[in-house]
Every structure is written in structure tokens, then in C-alpha cells.
Length: 507
Figure 1 (cartoon, rainbow, N blue to C red):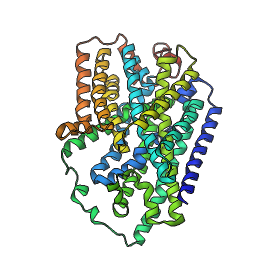
Figure 2: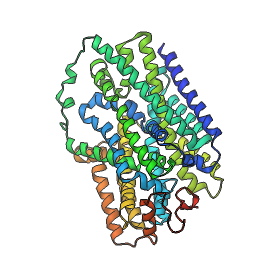
Figure 3: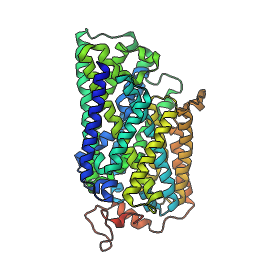
Figure 4: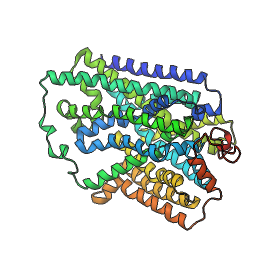
């Protein structure tokens, strides 16, 4: 029964995704449709789409698995992933939208007037995108194996194929509709089983387990280097959100800066509702599925609980519903990441050789296939931790660029490049070492596991220090006015057009 129900759930989500994406294809006609949905997405729809792509494998499966294994310290993951949008709302959302750019490399070139800064930003977008995509593909393999018994590579290849069909066909217009639908699917897929599982738990007499009272599970900051690891995690998740290319590009789809702020407020509400649920599965897993910890399958606790607590057809159906939600998580996040990679690669490498739409389609295809190969080759790593490492890279590179670029007119091209390269090199070294199984004892191992508390301050220091001894961009005053002036004002006799091609550095 489980293989049949699980297979039906995966097929249903895949078909629904393709149908909605096909509808988006019908209304995708221009380059702007493919890159930023012609900047016409309403705040609530955009917030739902952001929730759809942001709530990834790490959110749907990984948080519960980490809470199951390591307890209250892991609650910082959902807190940080939500609070990152508060920082984004206060410091970045509206000015970034007013820049009029399509991508983060567009913003970098606009702000510091440097082709080198654009190239460095493009390389980092691809790096972060690949790091974030790998756990999505691996999570899909885990889910399909749990639901149907199929080899993990089948799930990874399935997600990659569906994402390619959606993104390459309709671009941002298609995935906006798909991701908005998938947020609500994921919320219902977690909420309904959680309510029923709580009823079962109460019916069983509300049992507890000695595993719920273990000191290193319920007491924060109790392990080796716990203080450093916790604050490094907080820094990575709080500051990394603003540097995630697939999240930032969403704000370019709003009509103006005010709509970008309203979108961010709505996102905070949607994420807060969702993140109440995964920790519940982790706690119930301590009672009913603790053997997953010793078996090294903690990430599957969300999918395992219904069959263990209910059994029979009811448990099978709830498992299928959770599998559908998990598969939607992989599809939506992967779609956003592939769009961000494809947008950058097509503009910077293929725009002179192919028309924009063809270049976008070729770039997304290559990006998805290369990442699939990396996912198949890399070792198993807890999906939430793998995603958090991508946050560390984003926090060490694009966070300094955005904060300093928006709020400090002294940022220079050489400063921006030096800071991004330094932060990117340090954090990427830690990420690659961790993903491929390098383990060190003591403080070196702690820093490799959670590098942000070291790499983020270093990136800021290098960016500021280098900028202080180099020349500022020629048109920095005009750029700062563009970033901080509401759109309804017209500057320099109409030279400020955040909606039009004049705003684009490559135009």
C-alpha cells in the first residue's frame, strides 16, 4: 500500500506542477517575463512564492531530523531562517528593488561600476546555487526511497527533470505560480498529519520517554564548543538570507519598493506559521521513532511517523500526503535556484551568442545537470546542515556587499571584490571540506562545521579596509539617490526609470 500511495502522491504533485507551469508558459512572452515576471507580481502572491521556494528540504525534513537528534539547540534553525527576513525587510528589500536590476551581479555592477565585481558576483551566485541545490536533490532521493523503495538516484533525477521542464519552458512567470501553489500544499501536508498524530498521542495516554529528558537534548549550549557553534549558526542564518540569489531575485518581481516591503512582511507571517510544525515531528520522533537516530536516518522521521503511530491505510495515506509535501519542497526550491543560476549564466556567458530566452534555457539546463552530478557524487550529509553551509557562504559574500553597498557610499569596486573573494574562499573551503567528509578535532573542526562567525567579520573587514584606501565609483551619488528615493519621484528630468531597461547595467 505504501509504495502505491507514495507513487500516486509523487505523480500527482509532479503533474500538478507541470500543469501550473504550462499555464505560466502561455503568458510568458518577453525576456522580462522569463527573468522577473515583468515585475507585476502582487505582494501576497509573491510572499507565497517566496515561502514556496524558501521552505526547502532542510525545512520540511531536516529541521525535524535535527531536533530529533540534537534537541533544543536546533530550534535556532527555524528561528534564524525566519528572522533573516526581518533584517531583509529593514535594510535591503526596498532599496534593492529600486536598483532596477535583474540579478545580484546586476546590482554589483550598478553599485560599484565594475565588470570585475559583476564576474565575482556571478561566480558566487553559481556556487551558492549549486550548494543549495545539492541537498534538494538528495532530499528528493531520500523521500522517494522512503515512499516507494526506489533507489535514491531516481528521486534526484526526477526532480531535476521536472524542474528543467518548468523553468526552461516558462521562466520566472511559470515558477511564480508553481511556487505559490506549493507553499500552501507544504503547509497543509505538514499541518493535517501533525494534528492527527497529536490526537493519536493523546489517545495513547500522552506518553513520554526518558529520551525527552536527556540533559544534552533539552539543555542548550551543553556540548563541546557549543557557544561558538550556536552564535555562528545564528549569524549565518540571520545574515545569509539576504545573500541567497533565489530569494533576492524575488524582490525584483515586485512593482516597487513599497510592494517589496509588504511582500517581506507577508513572508514573515507565512514562515512563522510553517516553522511551528517541523519541531513537533522531531519531538514525537523521540518517543516513537528513536531508532532512526542510531540508523542514521533521522531526516526521514517526518515520513516515518504516520506508519509507526497509526499504521494501516490511514498511516499510508498520511505518509503519502507528507511525501507529496516533501516533493513539492524539492521542486519549488530547486526551481528558484535553477532560475537564479540560469539568469546569471545566460547574461554573463551566453547573451552575446544566443537570444536571451534561448540563452536562459541552455543555462538552466546545464546548471541543473551539473548539480545533479555533484549530488550523486557527494557523500550523505544532513540536509538542514548542508543548506546552512550555503547560508554561511551567502552571509560571507553578498551580505557585506548589500549592506555596505546600500548604506555606505564609501564602498569601492576593489573593496567589494576583495571582500567577496575573501569571504567566499574561506567559507567555501569549509563547506567543501564538510560536504566531502573531512573531519577535524577541536576548534578547527568547529570552525569548519560552522564557519560564519569567522568568515563574515573577515569579509566585512576586508571590504571596508580595501575601500578606505581605494577610489569610490564615479557616479556613486546618483546611485545612492536611486536606491533610497521612492519610485513616485522623478529625478533628473525623468532619468530615473526603475521599471525600464535604462536601469539595467547591461542595457
